[in-house]
Image (cartoon, rainbow, N blue to C red):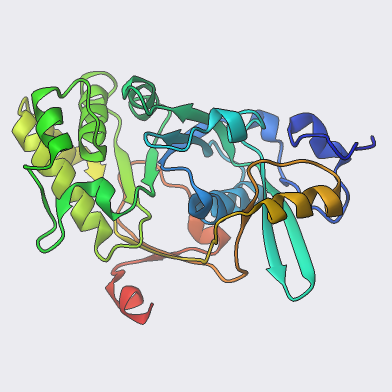
Length: 297
């Protein structure tokens, strides 16, 4: 199979990519979703999605990623058009290393309504929910880590819990839907660069659930885990030059290219609910306490 310079990355193109481009080392067509990730940007695609791609190559299981954006950018025009495939570049001196990541099996745009996101997050097949939503996304008070009950989105969500706008509101509603349908446990894992991120996430979701009532807070306490994590990798903003590099050097067009440094690190508190992707088999570390690693970073 030959590739024209204007060919776009997609499943049909994988078999014809040049040998120097690393491709998913598993049967991607057999991959089923098991992880939902909120906030699909360059860092997620350089970090958690790559670790998951490594895991699938080492120990194939039902851990496909469904990417969800509740804020811009829209995913359908980039990752969606490419069936979740994208190129991760590493530039070092004059060398360029290209790798196509295949762990994202679906994308959901939920910027105008929480309904598409809630459908994924409440699904029984999703057993791990990860997120990179930046510090503002937690709607917390930084000095205490508590939920900011005066935040406009939180005020809205407490008044309209079935049509939430905020991350805490969306997560609380998704957990309420899980509680009322299949009841399966789930881990909510923050991958944002915030100390004690799991504690903060547990605080804001738990407080929202307490305000919601109907036994949700007790169900969360028994069925949901909020481990903390330390993440590290530099992923600079993609430029048009990066996109052109892929086309000129490797012969295909990819509108979702990301660029990362070679070094990466992921340290996760060993506190989970239900099944867990064994990211420790692909270079992550499961530890009892993340705090020392946060201090080292």
